[in-house]
Image (cartoon, rainbow, N blue to C red):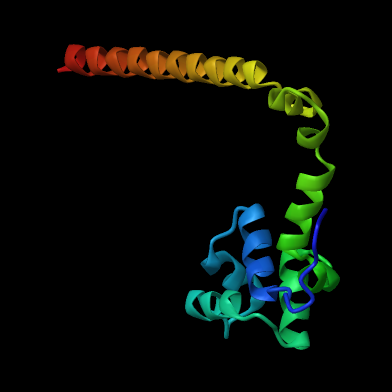
Length: 142
């Protein structure tokens, strides 16, 4: 059973960091979105704060396009406990069965990456051939 620690507080700064990273933004990017007075250093300090002032949280919310309530209510510890207690790990004999619920199959991802690699290689070969042709044309003109 999940036990909830009543003294555990939600860390709003960590939640800001988590969603900033989910967006693929660096601290500088969030600072740019929040306005001229914001810097990477200020974002770093903000992400360390357990509680963030409401007006600043609203600014972050607008920049990341995420409701203020998400930053105020996302409790990582509680979320992990819910996942662990309600996940298929508790209800099956084979832990690997969790992959059956995944929308991305690992083999499909490997095939996709391989195809991207082949396409990149083909583009590189084409560019090399074009470069050789330009060099030959340049040498012939001299």
